Amino acid sequence: MTDPLADLLSGDPRRIWQASWEIIGTRDAGLLDSLRHELSTIHRATADIELGGAISPNRDALIHALEKVQSYRAWRCWCDDYPRLLAYDPAREEDRGNVIVLRQDRSGWPVTYECECNVCNRRFSVEEGEHHSLWWRWTPERQLPGEHATTKTA
Ligand SMILES: [Zn+2]
Image (cartoon, rainbow, N blue to C red):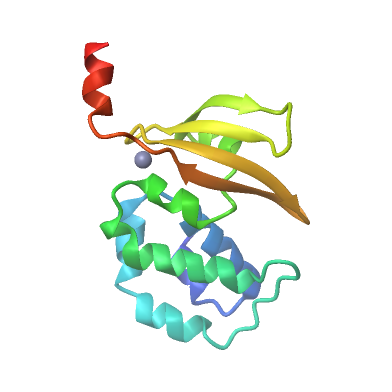
């Protein structure tokens, strides 16, 4: 078992980077809660460390991770985070059991996906792009009022 808190306080840029991505990927509310109590300590311990990162600064991952720790309780669902970050690979999220990939269209550009959250059934259209590395833009599909009721009677 890794210890993200120890990693974040380690002063080691590589461990901080790994812990940031572990937090971004986790759905362990207990872990996030325990980190939440240490947020000010984490901010102090990481503020002056040079985290590096050539194309997308590694500090961006840390900032995103700490924002998640701070705000996830206010989220409607874990999938609230998808539109905020370009790093959620639909295939990997499906492997984790977090979403179902309903459709994948590789015929055109950009490559697009339609995904459904396994927790709240919200659907997203996802656009895949490449700029030095692959990224994915998640956009929640608009649900019309009363759509659920219509689906039930259909
Ligand atoms: Zn969801």
